[in-house]
Length: 243
Image 1 (tube, rainbow, N blue to C red):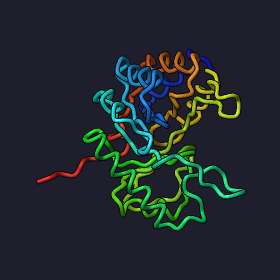
Image 2 (tube, rainbow, N blue to C red):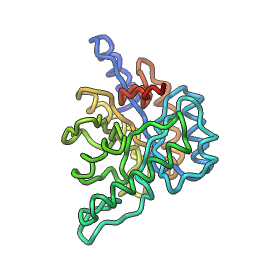
Image 3 (spheres, rainbow, N blue to C red):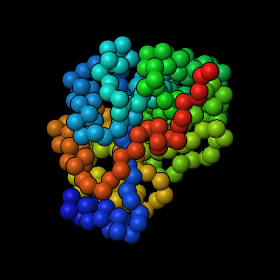
């Protein structure tokens, strides 16, 4: 699919009364780097809201000074360390770890990001490698997490008190040398997910973007008739009132 075909599909949906909604999540934030500055600058110049998934133990205080009002900080694990046992896929939360230990680690990161990000923090959890054991997911609301974001069309099992909203289009080819997946692949994948209910989530990883990935995002953000949701809108989150 090329840009013309993609824009035609957007227009068809508009004419049919089915406006397109997208949201944007970027993972693995922590250090202040040129690529992070490029990411935040792109969000600002194109007026596109960004959900920045920050690794608490990697977070430099200077990161938060860079953020503009359209950036929401969400939690990306605690230390992003792979603890998988032999035969397990990469995960910070292996099946053999006592659940209270894992929950305490999540809670520690939650408190750290709340303190660092202040009003820009949203209690939404995006696990490293988009992978978290189900029993731990179910416990997240007990420590104050209200949203969960993974990857793929299937949202997974519903958890009371936890709104789940996945991303659907990862623009990095992880098994292909960490390159941009290509215009055709990215647009075709997004178009397929338009058929499903709910906003389509774009997943980026600023630290590994090549020039083609940045160029694609710049072009994507010029497409008309798209409503880009903030993380607060996407997760229907309203901060608790304090009296």
